[in-house]
Amino acid sequence: MKAFNLEYTQPFINIELIQQCHQFAETKTSSANPNYFRGGQKRSTQQIYQDEYWGKIGECVFQQLMKKRGITTDIDFNIYRANQDHGDLIDTHNKKQYEIKTSTHKANNYLLTMDQYGQDTLPDIDFHGFVRYIVVDGVIRCDAGIITRHTFEREHEKIRAGQCIPHTGTPLKVDNWCVGLRYFEPLI
Image (cartoon, rainbow, N blue to C red; front, side):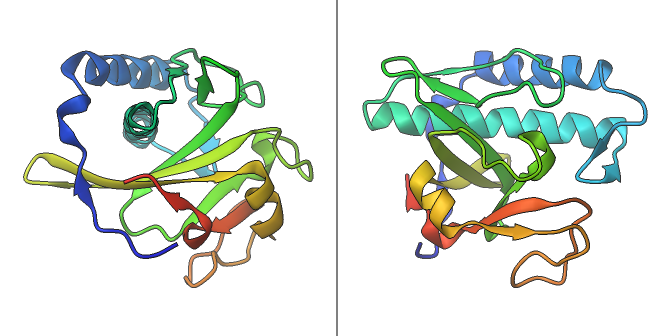
C-alpha cells in the first residue's frame, strides 16, 4: 500500500453518531473490570474511554466510506464479553463481517490480538479494515484501508509477546497477528 495523505473525513460523522460513540465508550468504561488489561497492559479509566471512543469513531468513518462504495453496513453498538465479539460491521446485504482497527496516524501495522479469537486460530472475519486518524485544529483527518480474509491469511505474521512490532522498537505484551498496512487497499 502506498503512503496515504490524511484527508478531511467530511461532515458525514454527524453529532448523533458522535453522541452514540460517546455513550458506548461511557458504558464500556463504567462496566470495565477495574483490573482490566488490554494487550497485556493495565489501562486507566481514561485510557479505556479513549480507546473505546476512537475505536467506535473509526467504525463510523469506515461505515461511511463503505457506503460511498455502495455497501451498506450496520455498526454494532452492543457490548460483549471477551471472546464473544464477532466483527465490528456487518454487511446488511450478504452478512459479511468487517473487523475494524483504529489507530493514530503513526501506525504502519494492523495488529489483532490473538486471544481475541483464540490463540492460534485465525479469525473467521471476511474483511479487515483500518482507520488512522489525527485531529488538527478540531478537525478529524484520516485515511483508511481494507483487505480480504484471503490477503490477511496470506500476509499475516505472528508476533509473540516480547517481540517487537515490525519496523519499530516497540515490544508487544501479548501475542498478535500483524499485517503491514501496505497490503491494504486504500478507501480514501
